[in-house]
Image (cartoon, rainbow, N blue to C red; front, side, top):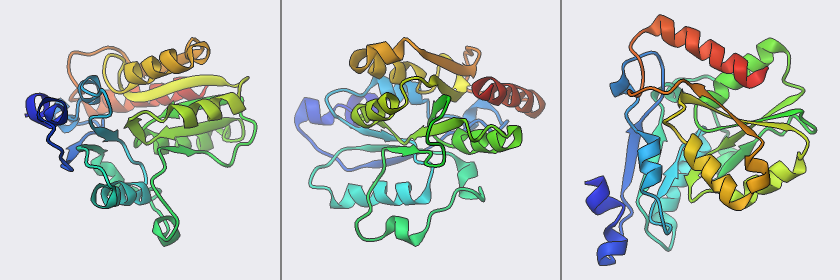
Length: 235
């Protein structure tokens, strides 16, 4: 259905759609069926501005995404990566002001607390909260800035390039909770190679080892691997 109709209907038959798909995804120690969005496959189907793929990490950004689907003068299918754990995460909150007059969707959420970081950690989705919590525990939150890419396609390359240029000497890392052969890593690096090749060569990928499944089924192994993942990204 996705391959034959949703992502290709406009190119094939000039049929437009504002369909919204909420795709459960997020590695939380459960089996692979709990991490079933397969972001890497969705991103391979993106071309010519045919769809929107987003991984919002704040209630305000989710609100603006859904509102945009109704009010925008155009119609595109919207794929929302929706981690279940953010529904109950205490840090995942937004003020009413963030959804008020004059506000809109933010394709990138930058860390305003660090003005001259030594390390930039790019990520998308719920892992941002885990990175922030680990940073605070390591007492390194004064030297590391976290950039959350909320919209994966169309990719916000202009905004990201400006942020990277503003911190040209900082070490740059892409961190994802998915295995290296999954998630958004290949897509993000490909966008940077095409539009900012010098910067792309300096980005280090931090991810789980390549796997043929979306996730394992052992909570103990998951917790151990996740702690190691955060450590590698931040140190």
